[in-house]
Amino acid sequence: MKNNSRKLKNAYGFDDVSISPGEITINPELTDTSFEIGDISLKIPFLASAMDAISSPEFINQLDKLGGLAVLNLDGIYCRYENTEEIFQYISKEKEEKVTELMQKIYSEPIKKSLIEKRILQIKNTGSKCAVSIIPANTKKTLGIIKDAGADILIIQSTVTTAKHRSNSPVGLIFSEIKKNLKMPVLVGNTVSYSVTKDLMKENIDGILVGVGPGAACTSREVLGIGVPQVTATLDCSLARDDYFNETGRYVPIITDGGIRTGGDVCKSIASGADAVMIGTPFAQTLEAPGLGYNWGMATPHDSLPRGTRINVGTKTKLKTLLFGPSSSTDGTLNLVGALKISMGMLGAKNIKQMHKSELVLAPSIKTEGKIFQQR
Image 1 (cartoon, rainbow, N blue to C red):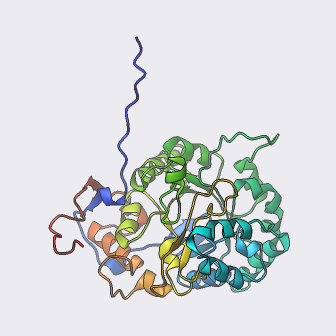
Image 2 (cartoon, rainbow, N blue to C red; image 1 turned 90 degrees about the vertical axis):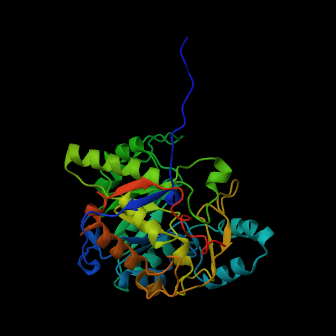
Image 3 (cartoon, rainbow, N blue to C red; image 1 turned 180 degrees about the horizontal axis):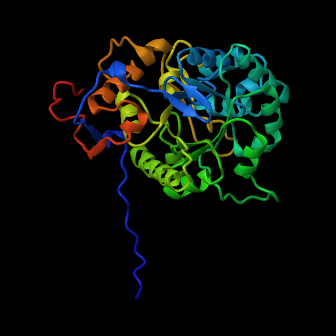
């Protein structure tokens, strides 16, 4: 008789692992944290999520000046309303039990093509790189505007994205065809597996977003029961990237998206194989973010099955301090770039790709061992 039983695979998140120190060390100032997407280079491997409470045109400009990249959500508030300030006021002041209903109403306002063009031009006129995000269902009808307005990077993003999607459309979304018509890098996400990552890379895209449900404002794991802890997801997807590179000679970067709270999480993402990280809530806590101390998931306003929630994250620091310090906190939530450079120095990694060679160890007690006086 055939045994149809299935075994569970172990999967690990940031709190389950640690990075083993390197055999040589280098000065942190000698490390190179740069990151490339297609022909676009960033000084630091930090992207801000395409969340309305974070990536306003003004925030995008501020992060660009610091060497990172923030992504405008073309399905969001900025492309539905001319005046967004009052919308953020409504969301921030609504009672907890009514806020999702309010968001469903706010996001029922149609997306306006004129506002998509206006926001892209608004960003470009500041001299900033313009990265935009769109859900797969809205991609085809928006491509022309994105192209004509002069966006620099397109991210096609949903909770789970594959290269083998079935729908009622006679011709589905074919990423390789999109690439032929656009002279800009195209990133796709999100995914968590080796096979899907490799399938997507075969579509000639320029980057993969990794992560299903780890974000602080996302409830997909609770609502749908779907997700893989970020360290395991990043390891699996980066292995697909490396195998694809060995087979084709084309390197497609991996971006770990979501669940990152501290400098240690950033470092573990890179050591797991990520070329960059996409962060949400820590950016929402900055003075430059438009969310008035709140953040919410991109699927929070879904009209039939919300998969996110509004969270009160507070306003805690300036954007520059979050990334470059100086830090007045010992919990790793400030000076994220500084933490990455110091970690790279202790690992003997001169650049991001060398950090991929670091050794990770299972360490479930890494945050508690010897820390009795730090425990609350």
